[in-house]
Image (cartoon, rainbow, N blue to C red):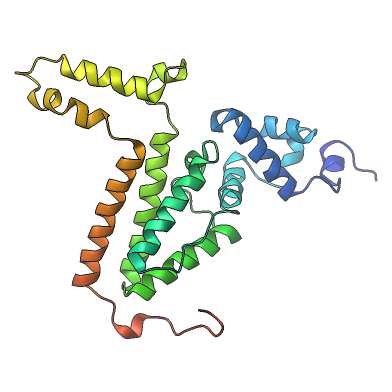
Length: 242
């Protein structure tokens, strides 16, 4: 019996899970996560929405696939320098990577989608942490903490700072207006907000990120000093691995 409709479309060689994810990435870049829908992805592919359900059960599964695909071209943690230099550079790279892809942090934050790309990054970062001497438990928690810090920071960067930004006002102008408003508050009621108006609004996002990252690394350094891994917890070297 000849198949028709969605079944016929699903059988087309060009309609695969990979082409579906590629189309979803195009929609995400063009319209953001708020505009991402199964219907729009189907339209991007020139098929009916029902055809997509041969490859993904729902939008949440599509977001799992997108999470891993967004990491396909992410750079691995470097091997140059000590563990702190490696994790600093990796965090800086990860932030740049997320910022370069529209709404990527809104897709990946909090989502554990164990595809090949994410597994590769996780393995490499955990390798650096264990090699530095962190215990297995501390390495796992540090890995989560670093990811959550970068993703959470970029979530704020990829979200409007105020309604006026969505209307064309720059983030700098929004911050300046906030500083002016803080300075105009009654000083007796809000002495700290008035005194720190400039300090609260002036730092760039780069400065804010660097400050938070360094304090996080300070904490990991203290943890490593207090609770170094027992030598037997470190993995045996893998043949051929530097």
